[in-house]
Image 1 (spheres, helix red, strand yellow):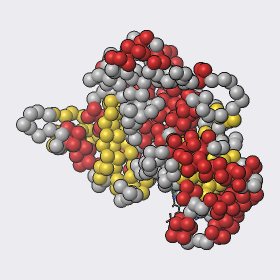
Image 2 (cartoon, rainbow, N blue to C red):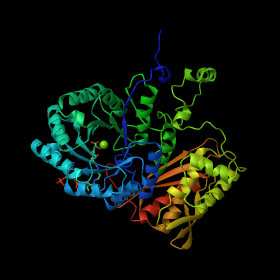
Image 3 (cartoon, rainbow, N blue to C red):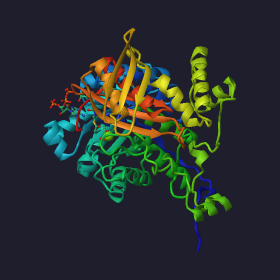
Image 4 (cartoon, rainbow, N blue to C red):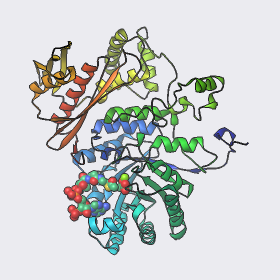
Amino acid sequence: MLFRATNLTCEKTMKDHLVIFDTTLRDGEQSPGASMTKEEKIRIAKQLEKLRVDVIEAGFPAASIGDFESVQAVASVIKDSTVCGLARAVENDIRRAGEAIKPANSGRIHTFIATSPIHMEKKLRMSPDEVVERAVWAVKMARQYTDNVEFSPEDAGRSDADFLCRVIEAVIAAGATTINIPDTVGYNVPEQFGALFKDLLTRVPNSDKAIFSAHCHNDLGLAVANSLAAVQNGARQVECTINGLGERAGNTALEEVVMAIKTRQDVFSVDTRINTQEIVPASRLVANITGFAVQPNKAIVGANAFAHESGIHQDGVLKHRETYEIMRAQDVGWNDNKMVLGKHSGRNAFKTRLLELGVEFETEQELNDAFVRFKELADRKHEIYDEDLQSLVTDNNIMRVENESYRLVALKVASETGESPSAEVTLWIEGQEQTAKAQGGGVVDATFKAIESMVKSGSSLLLYAVSNVTNGTDALGETAVRLEKAGRIVNGQGADTDIVTASAKAYVNALNKLKDSSVKAHPQVGL
Ligand SMILES: CC(=O)SCCNC(=O)CCNC(=O)[C@H](O)C(C)(C)COP(=O)(O)OP(=O)(O)OC[C@H]1O[C@@H](n2cnc3c(N)ncnc32)[C@H](O)[C@@H]1OP(=O)(O)O
Ligand SMILES: CC(C)C(=O)C(=O)O
Ligand SMILES: [Mg+2]
């Protein structure tokens, strides 16, 4: 039997470039509870630039002042990727998007309007003729700000193909340079979605004047399969997010599409410019910031994606890695160094390793502060892994809220069989230290109650999640806390070798975000 399996065996041919359009900061952020601050968006955008994505959709500038400022800030710092802002086919949205992307080296406006019968009739309350007219108008207006204009017929996956051809031909004639075909509700199956691309590319007379793109949602778990089917039928841009984050069941996972194309070069006639070694750092950063943990069995970025436990597999891998591995862990950014740094390491090694992990210190003081925290951790924990280092820096930098109102000063908890768990917490509250004690169902509950008795936020806890980022009982634990108050939802994160301290830090981090009105928060929808 003959197997044509790996890219190592396929002939080198000229491949088309597949544009990777990352929408973690826009569609990913639409996930309830995944709201990001401007600083968090900038950190992710910088990592996406290192990953070498072609386009970063940084937000929806007309949505809020915070989102406008985030897109503008991303447009100012990113040099190597195109920065894109989303806009409905309305004047204010397009103007705001145009203004927000102005500082970009390369800026794109992405405008959209729905084309499916159900959306046109029930949501937009517009006739098909009005939709075509509005789409053309929107593209022409967007072209006044940039010659890089993308148009999406929203809910294309449930639109009439003849009508789609009509809209697409008209918007290309009006100046759209990318035509994105969204399966907005994740309804399509691969064969059908692939056929739609073939049909559109064949029937739209000016289709050669634009790049066709796929934007898939994962409601039936088919987002990646549908995107790949689109690529096999002529799509040359895929819209995706890190970890598949996104509205409802999420979007196409960037890491899965990119690695499918890289690993199966014998199947796909395209290539990307992605630096795949930056995939795992990007995944961790997004998981940390949003509090959406990655499931262990997630392809490419899950903790078990390259782990082998069963004897026959271990035996096979030890004899010849490719018996059970189709990709190399290092190629997607997993580090197979067992022990990276410890308490005998110096500042140079610490700084160098963090640089490799994508963390750059802006000042010598920041480096020194982080190094002190590293040494404290190394005293408590004998093995320091990359994940520990990332959490250590994350905990103190990413999670910092600009206008900090509360800080954890001290925490003492007691738990004894037959007794109510209790906690004593000291907080720095706007310049003054306060201490409170409380009892609870467990030590974390008691800690949260003690904190709330001082802060009196009136918020409700929507989510509390704990994950350990490395193995062993001395592992650094990461916690995520999601709070809601008057319809605003914020996420807080904390990390520490002591899980109760990590929980308290996450709670305080969320309270700071709730207090700081400049922090953008999601309205409570669909929870
Ligand atoms: C499939 C997608 O992911 S689409 C992107 C979804 N993302 C978001 O909605 C996040 C950002 N959105 C927002 O902040 C707000 O919805 C805003 C600022 C855009 C609009 O807020 P509001 O003016 O209060 O309108 P609201 O959200 O209640 O309703 C949407 C309106 O836009 C209309 N609309 C929806 N899509 C489009 C479009 N592409 N072009 C033109 N109009 C549109 C709707 O018909 C509705 O109009 P109506 O108020 O006349 O009935
Ligand atoms: C705005 C569009 C492209 C979208 O996100 C969708 O239709 O899912
Ligand atoms: Mg979408």
